[in-house]
Amino acid sequence: MMKQKMIVFLPAHNEEESIVHVIKRIPRKFHPNIHVDVLVIDDGSTDRTVEVAKTAGADYIHSFKTNQGLGAAVREGLQQSYQLGADIAVMIDADNEYPAEEIPELVTPIFMGESDYTMGSRFLGTINGMKLHRRLGNYFFTMLQSVLLRKLIYDGQSGMRAFSRQAMEHAEIIHDYNYAQVLTLNLVRKGFRVKEVPITYQVRTKGQSFIKFQGYMTSVIPAIWKEMHRSHKKVVIIPHKHHGRVITTKKTG
Picture 1: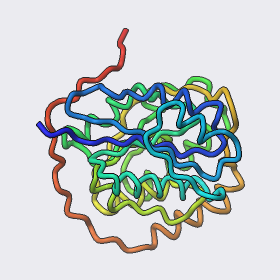
Picture 2 (picture 1 turned 90 degrees about the vertical axis):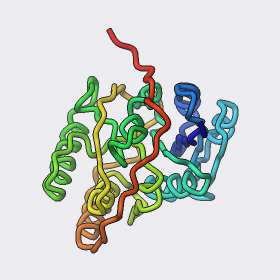
Picture 3 (picture 1 turned 180 degrees about the vertical axis):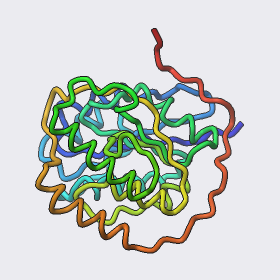
Picture 4 (picture 1 turned 180 degrees about the horizontal axis):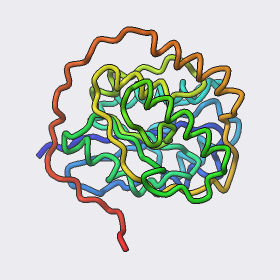
């Protein structure tokens, strides 16, 4: 059987202390019919992020000359994954908060043709240690997405997501600061099937988040307004062709 190509891409800005751990945790051989490559989108880092990523085993690195924003980095990751021929793309933050070893669970609904776009949900899994202000912010923006889409979503800000090839092709992120809300609004409104998969959350131990409350108020909310006032044609979804059931690697008990 022909192998499917999966690209795991990491948007990264000054993550030299964490990115090596994320790359080394990515399962490379969890299924005989899936070939896994790692792509790093370096968002104008001024530290050793690129050097460390190469040493850790990244297969591709695309660098911005200057910091452009998380939304721009994710947009580039999706475009690069599509151009590199990925059948499935996985995005995971480079800060080591998200469980890279649970990627097989994340991609299984796409691999099985049950979904086109999956999000790793901390609120369906575990959120131990998440600070109160971040939790409240997550609740607010997730509830906003649910209302706008008329669809129940549990974790609209997750930094761990997977995409079918069609979803990669049609995904639009209309601003550079962030991607989380507008990307889901964009894909679901175009007819792509979304599913949330429970994941294990762990608090960042190194570095700091570059997403701030003020940025959400001045950038994200206007972008949500703009996205909801854009007209989209429904995409004719082509069922994803799979080559067998994904055997997950998640430990139980």
